[in-house]
Amino acid sequence: MHIAEGMLPAPYAIGYWIGAATFVAAGAKSLAKKSREIPMMKQLTGVMTAGIFLVSLLPIPVPMTGTCSHPGGTPLGAILLGPAITALMSIIALLFQALFFSHGGLTTLGANTLTMGVFGGWIGWALFWGLRRLKFTLFWSGFVAGMIGDIAIYVGTSTQLALAIHGTHPFGEVFLAIFTVFIPTQWPLAILEGIFTGLVLKYIAEHRPDILILLHVLPSSASRAELSERGMTR
Image (cartoon, rainbow, N blue to C red; front, top):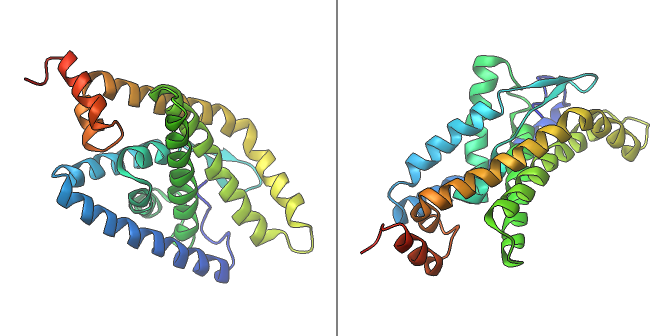
């Protein structure tokens, strides 16, 4: 979803930058607050930012769109650290990719941050918690959140590109044409991201449930039972 440099008209690029800056500022505020409550929050944010940087640096070029397909990593980041912080992690990862790998651009950094950090992060987070309230397991909640959150990133990118280039053609037709081009490469990646997200949550729950408790992914009532079973509490 890394829209290339120069693909967006200046008014659109500026508007997306302003929108992204709003979410990034909220993320910085959320990180500061959580860091006071959770001593290891900054370290976890750094590790998760590096993870997002790496998984989103595996591009598959998509013809005719001026962009590419790749996993996002932001649904998992939102589940673990909160959706607000995901926008902050995304802009840092995307900035380094644009500067050192020409992956995406600086003028399109706002747009790319919105799609990856906001669309992917918030939708993945909302799906995860919605399914958890319906008593879905960690794996299946993570799977759906990762898969649909990944697709949401490309819905956002398709919307941004269609708004920029549709001209006299109906917006819906141009959006559908762009999104259809993404489908052959993105659906398999979305399924893989769903599996990855579910497995990571399941692994942490089985081996370090205290981390998920600390991050409020698991309730404290469940944590005591799980920690006790593993001999991690007195």
